[in-house]
Image 1 (cartoon, rainbow over the protein chains, first blue to last red):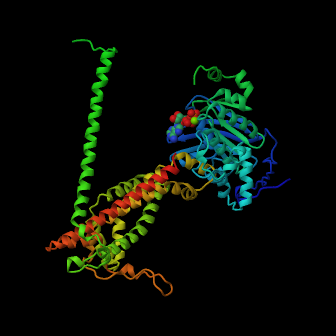
Image 2: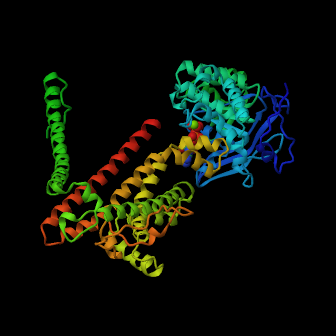
Image 3: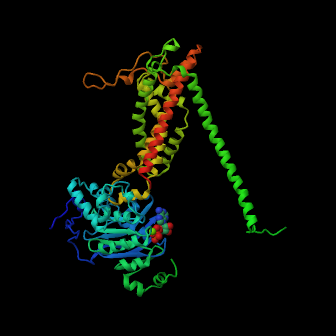
Length: 288
Length: 312
Ligand SMILES: Nc1ncnc2c1ncn2[C@@H]1O[C@H](COP(=O)(O)OP(=O)(O)O)[C@@H](O)[C@H]1O
Ligand SMILES: [Mg+2]
């Protein structure tokens, strides 16, 4: 069954960029660029908190429908880099982007001043370090992104909420209590709810900032399994301080140190045969 | 000079040390309880005294009669109706204005020297003596806008008075919505207004309502600014009813009617030489205090309810 989901936002997103409208079928597969083509590319990206330059001239390609992991010691700028992709820094005064993150296939600069951050966030979703469900029902949490996009039809909302919850492997646990408060879920379930909430709006890139650092090992394993599956429908960029996690879930790994991108490559290559001394020191546990 | 040494770890020393520190701990409990009882006791004594002095006046007649020259026939009808209507005007103006101002300051305003000055001023306004608001209202509402010595003037005056309370309470409530929740909403593509109306406001309703009720319970006891604008102490009629039997069935003429309020009625009775009026004053005082305590109780209940449904 080929149904395309069309919400008012689709045209709003494409506005001004002459991009082909992106069709999404029921399985969430996007009929666009082949896997592995660039979905986004940071080019000479620097970022400033006031006078503090937290990112220094970063060049990195994010391949379509692959999982790219960002690793590096605490404070090296992983979160800062991740939050450039959905312009989260625009909420913090006195911050500045320099350089570009090209977004494909539309080919525009995500961090350009004249690109509206809201437009960016409608296409790039994020899952945070600590589960942050809204203190509303499970259903309303997942439906919120669609409501923002003007979806009012109850049947469509229900269908999409179910699809998103299935996509986040939460449907079986949540289907009988959709009207219960999201705060009654366990930590791991809350985090999967946050993933469902982000998935419901069919993002093209999904950002994860240490999504399992507040969870127990079993909940962590579920989320990791989920991220590996998400690869089929969405481009994933994940920050993790856990190297085993990076090795388990990612196709590519980028190592950052002191605001710079030191090395990037196939995950297996980076972990078995790092080309830089700093990378080797970090993955062998000499610091971090 | 002896070289400093660490206290030894043997059982005796440790026990003696813990015991002596616990004495100080207990001491604080005693001091704290004393302070608490001093407050509670004076309130209780005050309330008890009012109830006793006014005991023979707690009748339906007292509540349903206009003031009279004879103490036994005098009642608080005009006063409590006046107080209620003035509070209605105050709530309907101070709450929307205060909430919008607070939301703007917290969610929208850039953090610069200008908003800094506004912030400091709002906090300081809470400390301005209430009679100053009365003077302001006399000049502004009574003379300039020609609203007269009316319910609307009184309501607006008290609204000004409690505006800082509402603003400060709303800001506190808004600030307690975690940043993570805002980020979640922004992350889905919400605008500032959507984040405010869908999340920040609903999650801080408890705090806002609490601030509103605390403000109103301060306003209901205010006398000085209302005397300044010329509230009457002796009123033997009620304002025009807000609901009429001819279309459009609501009337706003009551807004411009003269009025009196509970504390002014009390003040009037207290200042009379006839001792019989003193028990009227005491009874009215007890009722006013009861109203205030009731409002505070409602505020506490609301806060409790919202805390229970939303705990971050
Ligand atoms: N809001 C902020 N204001 C100023 N400096 C910040 C802010 N957030 C992070 N930083 C600084 O930016 C650097 C990178 O931080 P971050 O991206 O959070 O690191 P990571 O996620 O890799 O642990 C650190 O030096 C940190 O102190
Ligand atoms: Mg981080």
